[in-house]
Image 1 (cartoon, rainbow, N blue to C red):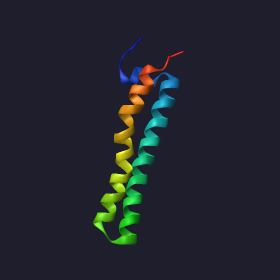
Image 2: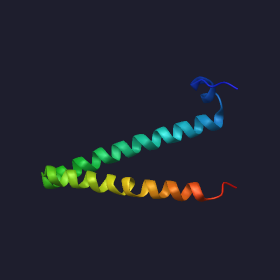
Image 3: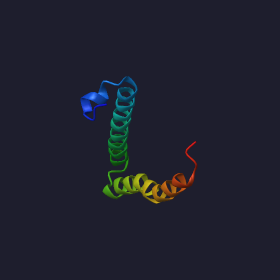
Image 4: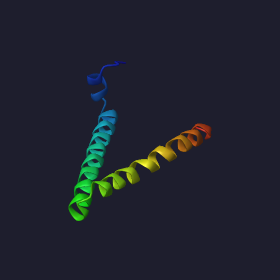
Length: 77
C-alpha cells in the first residue's frame, strides 16, 4: 500500500471522496462570499457583514467541541 497522494488518488473510492469534499468546500467558500456581498449590497454596512460572518462561525465554534465529545463516546459498530 502506498502513502503518496497519487497512490491514494488512484483508488476510486478515495478519489470520489476527495473530489466531493473539494467541491463541497469550494461551494461553502462561494456561499460565504456571496452572502457577504449580498448583505453589503443590501445594507451598505460593514457591521452587518461582520454580524453575518459571526453568525456563520459561532455555531461551528460552539457545537464542535460538544459534537466531538459526543461522537467519541458512541460505539463504532
